[in-house]
Length: 299
Image 1 (tube, rainbow, N blue to C red):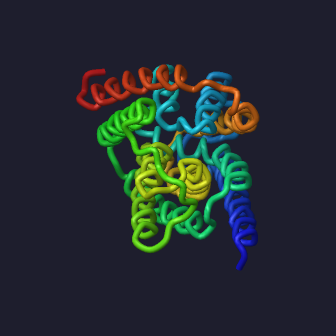
Image 2: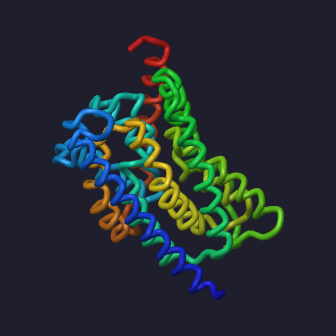
Image 3: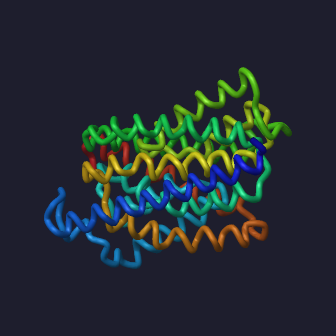
């Protein structure tokens, strides 16, 4: 099978997954509104989420499209404006950012060259990891989720710092993996996929993994965005069924995120990201310590 056929088959499958995700979420919301599901009707309907939630979606998915990531920044804004209880943050991140990330994947898989078999293998492993991760995190207590989210933010901040000051490997020129490096890449993305469901973003760690394996850093974009685009819609139903997400916030992320992805993809070459990343770094670190402090019982 030619690379072109595999690439378009992958995008076609992604479209089917995204449509199935939309049908599931809308159907679930209607059932709950009619009194057949869990939770409060007022919370689970598809009503207008409010401008603050939409703005959070726009800002975070704009940054996400630039490769900065959305989980750490979204968590920081959620806590700053008290939009989502900590217990529901991981589920809200996965449900709300799913469709904007699908759009990112369509853009980057279409325009950036990467070996399609490496792409398929690493995406598949991330999906498997997310499937099991979502089962675990929905059973955690609020304190455990706060500890996980706070730790995730510190990891994200360290990865940002390493990227900004050249501490992380620069990568090589390869566009694909074979043999032992491919096995390492698949197992690494399996772990990163499971961590996504705990609120730990995949972009930074995936960039580091790809660079360590000697691949061109540009090749990380279709891999990491394709991984998230598949795993988030597949893992999200478990958060929805267990009411482990905040629906209005998730809806706001989606509404704000979709146009932000399109705009960012058009102007990404014109932006200087160094100052922007520094500001994001300080916000993420502040939120990380605030979250860990709350987990110890000092709000």
